[in-house]
Amino acid sequence: MSSDLFSLKGKTALVTGSSTGLGKRMAVALGQAGARVAMNYFNNEERAAKTLLEFEETGAEGAMIRADVTDESDVNQLVAETEKKLGPVDIVILNATPDQPQKPIEEYDWEFYQSMLDFFIKSPYLITRAVLPHMKKQRWGRIINIGSEVFHLGVTPFTAYVSAKGGQNGFNRSLAHELAPWNITVNMIAPGWIPVERHEKDPQDLKDGYLNNIPMKRWGVPEDLAGTIIYLASEASSFVTGQNIHVNGGNTVH
Image (cartoon, rainbow, N blue to C red):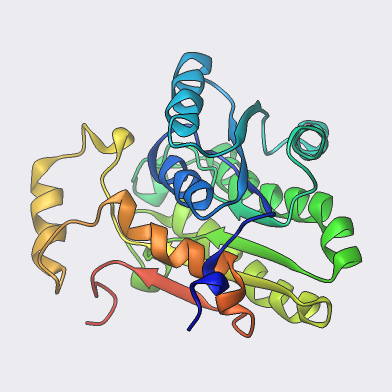
């Protein structure tokens, strides 16, 4: 298989929620594969500036754009600014996420449930709608949802997050059917628990219990997503759509 199948040279990618964590590593992987990459943040400008500097030091071309991806006007501005700075969006990675506290259902309120739906249903809808005109016109596009193994495992006590991720999975499957005639693929990557900055204070007993269940007997690291993201973003996956690929060392094989 020619390595050119995995090249993203000439493509523009947008990665939401990419100033830190998994999003940051996926943005770097796309840049190393040749894509121009629009990264996105909302809250921490200093961290975003540092991330962009680190990204540019790899030799890739990119931009960092502030936007609330749950707000329609911000999303439209994000896509417009990406097009102005880097070109129309060919590849979109729907990655942005809020805090995800685990609580019994009695301790959640609807406002929190709504915030999960806003990040994992509303935001993918708004962004997809904004990038589709260009993708349909050129009859080529890649839409990649970042899901989670929690939906498959039914993790508890976690109903708000798991429900919203299940909805995003449904969005992924239905949209794949809808956009297939335009040669636009729609897929999902479901990472396992890959510790990043926001997991620093997670209880050690939970970490130990999770690690014991992973067949590969090691923690995942952000770099483990690089190959999957490049595959789904590239021509190598041109006949793959509607899929949910778990990147978790076999944790959902049990």
